Length: 159
Image 1 (tube, rainbow, N blue to C red):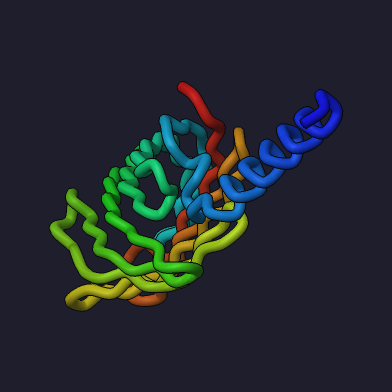
Image 2 (cartoon, rainbow, N blue to C red):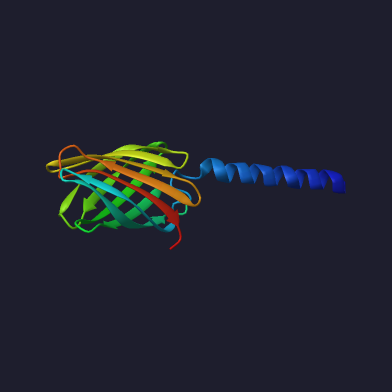
């Protein structure tokens, strides 16, 4: 085999390995780590600014996510913990809001740095949307049947 053919074969093999790695990466790839930021909380009494921090643990495949989001304002504090598994574009798992002792199931879809989920528990339902890039993340939680109607936050990685 000539050097030119060996080099071409080597480049081809690298290209295949690189494309296979990105094609098999799960939807939570890149979420890993600590995030901080701020946003707002809308309640039946009005709006308040909140400060938030989030931590994500992601398995090596990018298909399993443990999420912990803690937010506080002058009047509210909440901690949401989610365990999410992706099977292709479908996600499922569990969630809890620890300061109010709420918990239940989570289901939805995830792809391209985004996930959308419906969470349901005893007397509580909400929708969660997360859009994530390498360094920024937007999280929106909406609920029509609780004192907390909407939470939005903009987070940046690190911190």
